[in-house]
Image 1 (cartoon, rainbow, N blue to C red):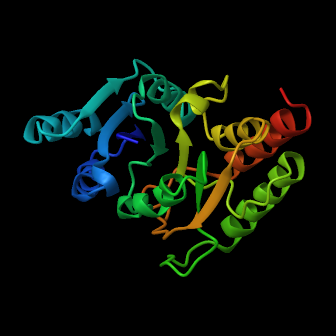
Image 2: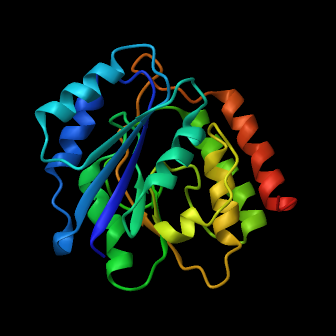
Length: 238
């Protein structure tokens, strides 16, 4: 493994996107693995574009590919673009907020480097790492969605909705992904689970959650959409 592709979908993260990029920059991956950073701006209406361009000009040593969507299409659509451009042997998804810590890429990479895994999910609900205490009903909702997803995928994940998902890039690029918003999570999980002899692992990660005042975007409507996607791609296997 020579290169890790890091896909970052961004929408109105102008105030903090440089902070997550600083964290990624500071990470030294094991075995001298190089980082390819792919940022997809989903037609932000704030200073996100300018902030990213400034960061790239100030950090020319970083391998950053910056793509701008001409209209807002959703997180899933931004990920589709990023996935198609990935050149690393493995690809990880990174939100542009500060809820997940790039220093923990090493934790997700370990099962791959040990020769055990093709896919690794970072679970917010297992392990002894730091977790911000926030919303009770969000936790219940996440556990319900994971339970329903597991019913149809026959997996025993604890956190299907996690952002931190590490994939073998060729396997990920072989999937026909359709969901343009937060339905990406149940769709990719359902389709990955159907691949013969796929090796899926899960590791505990930290979680520094945001409140809505701090910029959290997912809401109850996305929860119902996730349930729809679980049945669509899990039960009906579309």
